[in-house]
Length: 427
Image (cartoon, rainbow, N blue to C red):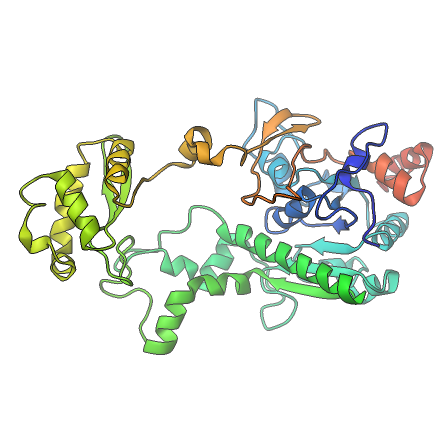
């Protein structure tokens, strides 16, 4: 296919023209949710693919728990006001199909026949139990691309296990590596493997689309979030494989010092204020010379610190002295002074400071219009393309918001037929 109308064709009652974009003409039948799946198809929608998000009317859309979960924009609550759901599903179309009914299965079959890609991140085997295995998908549309993304994939001894982002981080070794020697694992504070799994998923979808464009062939892309977590242990895995050294041992890792290449001082230092810090890195003797001159205290002028080897041997003392100097200043003040002197330095910023006060990230958090919430700011994409830029204009779909538009335009159903199906509990 690869020639379907883009999302803009469904946003205006007049049937607005499709905007030029990198993925115009690609249609996704999307069952993905939460972040590992919905975060992937968000990329596709932002670059102009028509992503049709299929949800279950009988469960009020709660295949995806983010639908009704915080954060919220105001006092309103319910399945249309989940901030995370809106953030991960911008510019997608939303339909509801009850696949427990025969008519629902027929509708889904026709929707798949009109699509290029089917995406999901259910536990392994869910789509198959619905009667839509990969073999069935191929019988519906021989060149279909099917992309599944679950904790352990569909092959191997763990394929029947269910998981969640923090579990993937634990089983992959990432959680263990998050702590320092002698202390318990610190954790990651958030389910970063959902982010990473989504990024791998969108790359896999694009590779399958490129193969399809070249050969006309579809395929099953089977992702496992636990597998995508393992490469993030890269240095630790290499050190064990080559040198037999475990990842957490006496003196290793130091959370901020750099060992290869060696630098001193190199760390995170306290500043004035509550939980305020600054990062400083002296790449060599020239950086240290500039920093020591700026500090201008007897300890910084010590000739014994002029060489890298000497500073490496006295790193603990050096960190103690430097921390005392930075503690009397604001983090942005230290940043400005060291940058002006040519010393690598940055204030440790909170997420809020990056969003609201940093001119470098202007445009990374666009506003979209949500049918129920109104204008809401969401995460943009960290990439700039001069010819085919991404766009985010419309918030996530409310439950079944585009039933009439999608079923009418794609499947030829009339308004009365869609209303009848709704009354019967099919949509």
